[in-house]
Image (cartoon, rainbow, N blue to C red; front, top):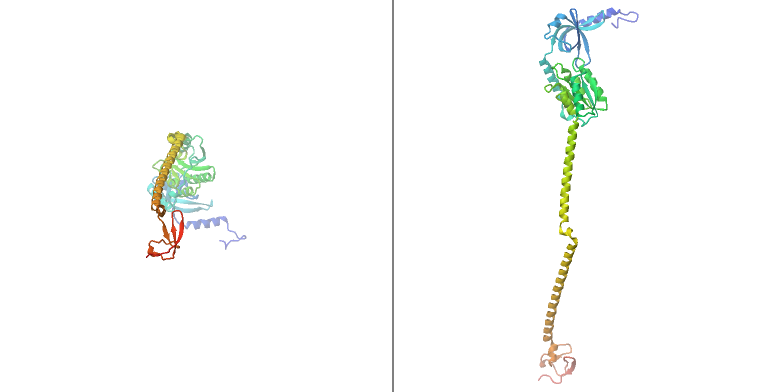
Length: 403
């Protein structure tokens, strides 16, 4: 086409559209899956929009009424279906649409199988891991609530939360919680609340319903959006037996919207009771400690050393005096015994002393060197000797030796 046209030789628009229609007509038929929205019937034709449940993509579909009514069960607005379609291009309007040749509603068993495969994929990526879940704040300043418009879930959360803590604040985002627009509206509301720094926790709440009604809360796009949030998310979808994939990726799962209010907001009455119990426990602990310390102090004060400290000093003084007297007696006795022993020794020395012998009239003859002469034969004539007397000594010369 580009080689055969120019500004001077353009092709008519009808020719271009006919060429596009011919090219699209060669595509043949194909099986597609999606979610039905905007379902209307006019005459013998049913018009609908087939929407991709994950991406914001849709296409128009026309269906003969006989083909539509042949589907069992007959699909309604929001139903998940598989269609055998043929792409068509309407030249007169320049629009594209699919023509449905067969419609097959997606059964519950097949939906469950698809959800299980998706659950396994997300679990393998770690989106459901316990270590990535965050703790809820004890008392959030502002709670973000995503719920249906004028829904019972909204009333349950608001009334129970305010009953537990009257000062709690909410930022409510009312969205579609089922149908073809649920995923996009919930995701947008989640993004707005997560961007608000005042919101400290987000609650996604919805009442019970069928598997198809709760299907948006198992959508992969919504699950990944919740996993990417910086704000802790509480899932309160359906009843206890309902378990969409949102419950697995959320930081906290609540069995019902009422249970979500209990998990997010503390009960002021319970907290006051807890404070009172802790206060009483603290008082008992302090009182017990004081009683033990006072008993110990009384016991210490009742001891003699503290009851009459002067008496203890006097007792110790008496003990010192006794020890001093005992020491004096011991020392006096020791000195007396030593004096007696000394007298005895002195008497013995006097008795054994040569001086005592000299006092009796004896004398000691010594040579000049001090040697005592014991025998007369030991001296020679003319030898000078010293005679020691008791009071003095005299020198003598031997005139005659021993004969």
